[in-house]
Image (cartoon, rainbow, N blue to C red; front, side, top):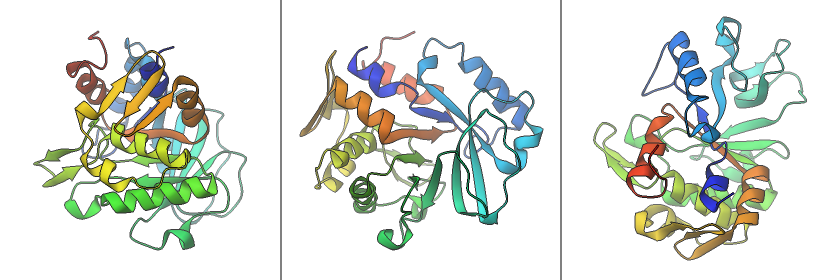
Length: 255
């Protein structure tokens, strides 16, 4: 396995139900099924599904990240396809599943981080005020690394590197920047905000054995370990767009 294949393996949770795509449930389910037959299917991980649509999802996707919003959420008996819960609020009962707590980057991170489970950062949205500045992303990564908690990201990361989005009216983060900074945080680095903000295509290189990212470099074994244990995935309403960007810039051969 090459470094880029290890990096991309199961990195994308398909969130076609969510903006800006906002697909209806049958269309999103059909897309998820179709993408499993795509040449880049190894990039695909879970189907992101709100709890209130669980009973309507037919057939159930093979792998589900279940979104739960609210306080004191009561969970029904969950099918085995549910691999993880992503919670904005709180659960009324414990569960044996991995739970990723969404953290509000505007608040005090030390007060909102859980003592166990995982954490999730919303890295974008439809308006400029929903995009965390680089220093907020850095703070989130450093706190998660300090506590050795696994992390996920959602929203705004369909592009590999930072870019201006005229529809949002702001500069969006890139998943190469954010994931490389997360790798660095879990490797003991602390000065990350500048890299998150400014690293671009020329700062990244994948070889058979390494991922080079600006001042940082990660071996194949480190990539595999970091992705499996700590830097889990990002949600995107597009499966194809991140792949096509990487293909156009020579990081992946065109399929």
